[in-house]
Length: 355
Ligand code: NAD
Ligand code: ZN
Image (cartoon, rainbow, N blue to C red; front, side):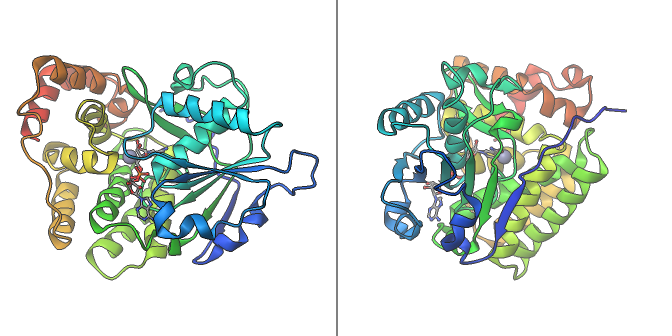
């Protein structure tokens, strides 16, 4: 039997459409002895969605837009940390990440890097962060990544896409306001929602499953189904994302994520889309769920690219295969401790070639 580690969860959650205006309730008081400065790290798309203007900000607060043109990198995080330190004479009281998984992960990582030396690339791995970060709040504006619930800040490093996985890279509070996801384009909404669907499937079918992770994943799946195949609403999608995230915190992802990281590293596909591309060829591993995924895809008229590995050089394909082989924990979760005997480099190459 697997010995489970201590599970941490986000301690404070403000839930409900329209709660953005009540952000103050989650933050340390301005007169509590800190600098009184709050730093907002906001997806650049919110220059035009109106969300940046709706943020309850004081005159002394700082706001930086996060470039989400590509998945966040360790370089971007290090640069943002340097900017915050240069602009803010004393340590900020709070870092507030507003956006999808990309912006929330940047916020988590910047919070950690304000209190730990060197480059964020040094902390990509499991439990490598020595000191707690600055108080941080996550505000998702697209639902599905589950970053709001997880202890992970996924970053693209020079040679690998990998998370800072630490209790210190988990939010101290989150605000789940479904009015913020109204402006997400339909295809992005689908891709990110499928990230949540896939987190739940991987958690529920994995060898690291337990009642706790299974409970979260089962409900996340039900909600996601209701939203994608029936008439579920945005509160349900937001809850599904959060619960899918909780299920993974208490277990692990699986084969789809192991393959999707390779697609993002080399071909630069965004995480949600990369997951969809990978999941679509995983009938052997997640059969009935892949069939349901296709039903959702059809209902929402989502087209996926095909032949994505067709023009890759041998060298690039090999980088993708090696990236997948680094994903030991997800592969152990999905296939057991002997995964390397069945999930070989040849098998991985074959799967990429089917995508
Ligand atoms: P994202 O943050 O990358 O954003 C996707 C796109 O949606 C961007 O173009 C963004 O500008 C846009 N967008 C966001 N909110 C919007 C809104 N309200 N209106 C219009 N457009 C909006 O998307 P994501 O799928 O949430 O996150 C993916 C990232 O999260 C990847 O980097 C992935 O590795 C990471 N991730 C992290 C975890 C974790 O546990 N930390 C889990 C899954 C994925
Ligand atoms: Zn994911």
